[in-house]
Amino acid sequence: MKLTKDLLIRFAKTHVAERLQKKPRPLCIYLTGSVCTEDFLLGGCTDIDLVCIHNLQPAVERELIPLTPDVHLDIRHYDITRFDQPRQLRSDVWIGSFLCENPLVLHDNGHWFEFTQASVCSQFFRPEYALQRAQPLIDSARQCWMECFSGTHKPGVFTLRAYLRSIEDAANALACLVGLPLAERRMFAQFAMRAQGAGLPNLAGSLAELVTSPAVTDEAWLAWQPEWKACLSQVSSQENCPVELSSIRHPYLFNASCSTWEKSPAGAIWLMVKTWTDAVTFLPKDSPLLDTFNGMCSLLELSPEYYSQRIAGLDRFLEEIEAYFDSFKRKNSLSEE
Image (cartoon, rainbow, N blue to C red; front, side, top):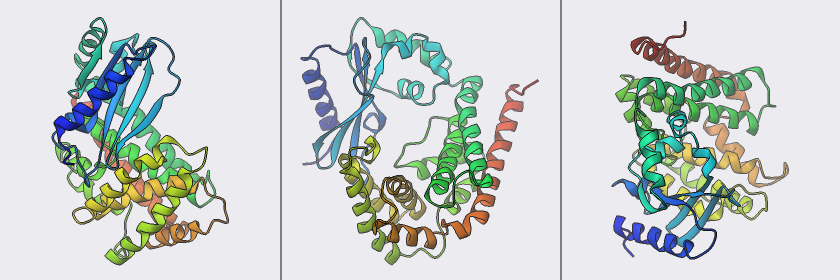
């Protein structure tokens, strides 16, 4: 079956029609994410992002529904009270951005969406709102760096998670000053464009250097694949598995990473390392699946013996972005008194 944009939208509309047959019905449902763009497939897979707004507190915040082996619905549920002050959502990185990024309304009761979107998206890209969205991200990135630097966590996977979180938040902080936040699977490619837009093209290379090493080869990459998949598979069978590591998402992650490898090894490694690191936190300490993970970290120079130089490199990356924040504030007369 050839996956086209029209077909994916039909999938979404069919699901919405079925959902509206049940009570209580959502107040509004809109389609957002990659399906609203022309670049919706990566590795032959995609997800269909739906946002449901409810008059009552929803039973779940997020649910995944498989449609085919290569496509699933990723549905976010929000209580309408989150939108009581729509202008405040101009400062919201995710809800605000998804409202303003060409969504497709599939159900709207009483023109709720039209009013809300107009209130949120008016002046959304003004510098002061961009700064309000980006500042918490760069602050979080620096806080995660401080956790690594101060040894808040024992050397190992939790320090690595803080390190990766700092990278992700810093990249999104810069992205949000010049545009919209970064997509999970296309983070490195999109960051390169945002960095170019900010006049900092060298930052794309600096980002890549934070997660890979010259020692990585095609053979090593291929050897990691089955172990990464085995780890995620085991974790997805556990009751406490988070939604983002659900088996429904595995083809979406694996295929995207593999298809990215040839053009952007660092982007492929990022997606693998981030999800693999999240997954191993759910494994017992004596799990044999940790052996390959630890070997991968060592080859990537992300293991404890490299933490000192990695944290120093991350500090330099953050300093460059923080300097851009300072210049952005001065340029737009947003400097603190």
